[in-house]
Image (cartoon, rainbow, N blue to C red; front, side):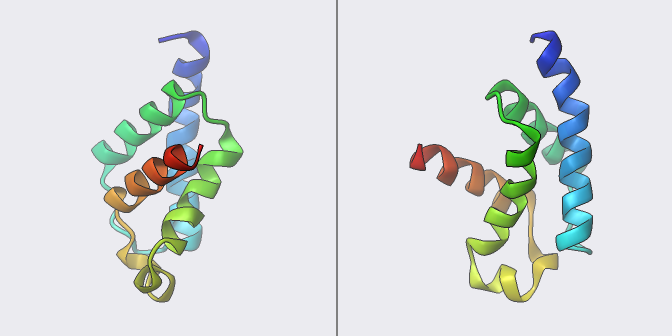
Length: 88
């Protein structure tokens, strides 16, 4: 783990929580899952803008999440990361 990754982890966790609170209030935020996701994003060299967009990508992935954002889960966020990696 580099210094940049160590600094990015708490920032990415904060961005994930903040974005979830803004666009998906009431979504179940599993702290352990969000921390693991933030660490994965930091390890991948993701930037802060991409972290915020990840939440929007996850919401747009399924119609029911667009209609009821509170149903968003960490699993949806992880699926959005995988979809983004598959796209290149």
